[in-house]
Length: 182
Image (cartoon, rainbow, N blue to C red):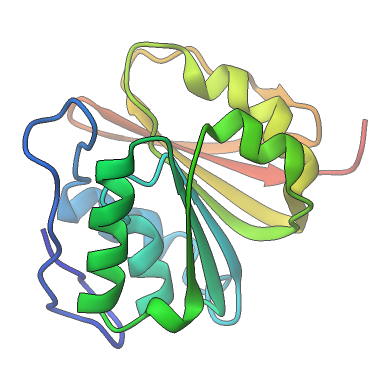
């Protein structure tokens, strides 16, 4: 796994073994995700929720995001995220938190311009987290969700509106945008 563009391009990133805690995003999916938000990234405030290895947030920082907060409940994953931020030389723009995503969202104010979600598959986590996340997304902000192809996602979650979905083999990437308050 590597950073594919920006200041840390080509840097190799570590991941925990197996897919129990982390499941690295394949390069073609990552490239497509970031191409879809390329003009939003410079100077953006980013949240990488369910961070795993931190590769998505690090990619955003490498491409010019101002800051990224990484959240994962696994202490092992948090250690990997910290090591990867140092390896990519983006640690000065990163804040890494160990804890439950839902608890974090209940205590954060945001706002975030870009939110990256890649939770464990098969648990319906995205459908549950999107409404809670909505209040932390800045007006005009975007949420990119990676999920299994048959994930059931709502067309709207509070102020977040499903704008587009992209299919890559067995992977579904969903783009939510912050609409007007309901």
